[in-house]
Length: 229
Image (tube, rainbow, N blue to C red; front, side, top):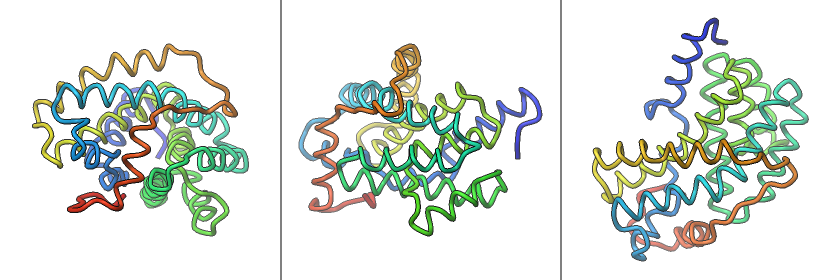
């Protein structure tokens, strides 16, 4: 359902950004289980540094430009699919690639159920294997079709990164609920820096988070895993 007023748009943003919204991100650990076991992320301070690193070194230069491109191309599903495929090809770690597609698929399923325009049509492309359904491309498409502007779509995406990591950290026992709220508040500054940075062209997506990628690759050989990825 497309928002009909500024208030309605704000309420839609709150709904889509709520941890209660079934985005599929709950099954993704962001490598935290491995990073915690290896002693790299052990407390609230190291977790905050990890969140800032993901926002600055991945979201701002990788997810954000793809999301914006998909948002701007939302009326052309072929163009969205091209962006989607580029994201998929540029995500080197299999676990991250499969996790991104799983989150994108979950978002498409929920929005198709909600009747968001274009959600079911693009979901059929994903189900038929014509498109990978990577998270950032799907977020851009669905945000545009749900009536959220570009700024709101990017804010929702960046907040989702911080919230997803914080939620994973809470579940593995790294931090408590108050620490999570402090982290989310502190992440706003890094998100603002990401917004202020020049927007890379869609064909210049890049990320530099090797420690996280290695951690996600090693996750499948770990013991006592809580997360599906």
